[in-house]
Image 1 (cartoon, rainbow, N blue to C red):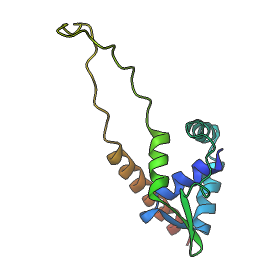
Image 2 (cartoon, rainbow, N blue to C red; image 1 turned 45 degrees about the vertical axis):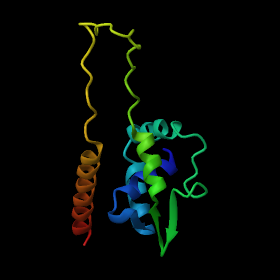
Image 3 (cartoon, one colour; image 1 turned 180 degrees about the vertical axis):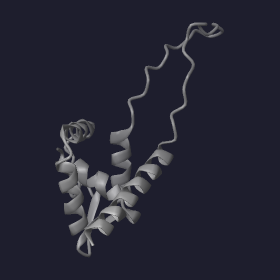
Image 4 (cartoon, one colour; image 1 turned 30 degrees about the vertical axis):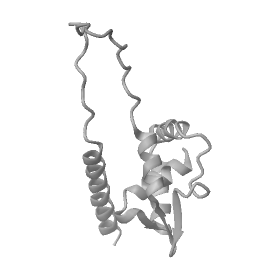
Length: 134
């Protein structure tokens, strides 16, 4: 498991990107024990950004007993999560007709909507876990 990617993923799921250390540790423990899939995913994401260091690169800041992801941190995380662009078609000569067998260009799904949905699901799961614990 890549610690730094995991921290970014956890923080981005919280309102305003801020989490106190107790919540960070709990979420980290859950993800660390969630299986091989999470470890492999974080390694793949980390491989997309060379020499990732969340503190020296100002991706995360320490505040009042917790950590908060910065706008730069959000941008780096989005860069890591971006799917590789599909192969671009070769340039056509001026006036040439497009190939009838060329695949239609698909627009990417709204990643913002997907992120909001994931955040909401995580928030609900956290609330359920807190309610069970009390």
